[in-house]
Amino acid sequence: MFNPYSIKTDPSRCLRHRYNKSTCSRCLNACDQSAIKIDHGLSVDERSCTGCMLCAAVCPTEAITVERYNLNRTLGELLIADKPVLACSLKDGLMAHSSGPCLGFLSPEHLVSIPVLIDKTLQLNLSECSDCENTHISEFLKESIAEMEIEGVVLVDSVNELDYHDIQTGRRDFFRMLRREPFQAAHEFTSSLTGGGTRKSYSEKSLPMKRRLLNAAYRAGSVTSKKKLQKLYSHIAFHKDCNGCSACTAMCPTGALSKPNGKLYFNTFSCVGCELCEEFCPKQSIYIIPIKEHQTHALEVCVGDKNDQCER
Amino acid sequence: MKKQYAMVIDLQKCVGCGACAIACKSENNTQMRQDGQSFNWADFQHEVKGKFPDMTHTSRPVLCNHCSNAPCVEACPVTPKAMFKTDDGITMHNDERCIGCRQCQKACPYSQETVEIGQWSVISFNKAAKDTHAFYRDPSELIMAGTASGAEMARRTHSIPPYRTKYSHPEFEDVRRSGIVEKCIFCDHRVKKGELPFCVEACPSGARVFGDTQDSSSEAAKLLKKHKAEVLKAKAGTNPNVYYIRSFKVKT
Image (cartoon, rainbow over all chains, first blue to last red):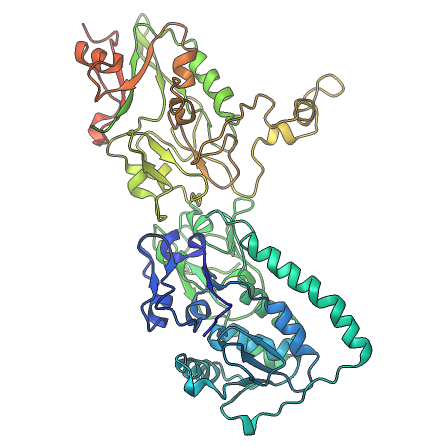
């Protein structure tokens, strides 16, 4: 089986590499082939990896991502369909408007955001999954959907239940496509040659693609969908022991914590909830709390304050 | 046998002229003192003791001690460590892996998180989210219509800072970016080419001797054998590799 999508790793984003005492083992637990090695750099054993991409789905900071896959392209393809269907490209002849890597890459963030962004119900074509070695991903998708109470995604197990209509392509669209496709392909090819951009340094802050997707969905979504999306956001509080050393701002992989002018700031939109700050804080004075309201909080560090948390 | 680079400083030869400090600043393009950080990889410890006329004044050149048992390496949280020991016994810092959490600065007995006047610090921190070498990016003149601005100097010399010495090394950059720490690396970019650290090269009185202490024929090893050497804060148990010999207090 030819799988054009491989796994790309970036140790600078990996929680275990940023902090040597981190106990994060999300990818290790997700991989039932034990193909991921984190002892000497972050690597995936290509011989035992089956390409289910669950590791990419569970990694909060995108230390593991799907190489040569363009999610924006998928979104564009789903947007023009009336009843969009997404499938993997690992099996031939699957009916879909867009195909990509094994659908295991769909994290809860993806599953919540995509239906909001395309404003339609998304069907996932899982009709061939029962024969595939990655059959366990359908269970993972079901769990994510149940846990997040997602309504905009339908898992379709058999071809008969699939509501698929091919997009009618006119003459104009055909020529437009002829012009667009080579450029798109050339762009994807060249970016794959350069490794999809330069390697990040550890101190660089970057927001994962799936979080950007979630933020876009949050801004576009209705009040009811906002409430659902909120579950994926986190908020932090400081214990009174905090001395404002700001080491957490350096440890944070996304830049959610910052100290621009002597005060600690926390940005919920940038926080991926990886809990690395909580683990790392030398004073053990950061903790993650459930989200109350959604806004950029300016948190003043309260030293000697009677309240054990402050949100100002 | 593994190398162990060390520096032996002869305090009776040192006149405290500061040539080493200036040489270091120009070689390693370090910043000016700002934000509570000294950025002096080679610095001085001045000590005035007693009451006139019964008093002593000591000037001691200080730099990273490249400790054999380095607490900064122990404290570094990233994998692989951004602060680590090389095979030559140099405490090396990798710019790419450093996240700027300043745990090394906290752990180092010779460093301060905030340097007051008169204090010194081995490790300095380039403040995050602020361009380094702010002076050479500032277009305002020191004296209005009287002097050039820092930004103008940088523009005329086509480099920031204007005194930039360009070099390349796999671990560290010649000019560091913001959000990471920096410290003396024994001029490894020079040592690798068979040259001496620039502070040693610049010292007019030959007070600084750099060499491999494991090689008994080296000048540094010979000096250590001949004289009783002292290290800074020996009680901290860090086993420094910067030695001071012939202090005026010690009879030789």
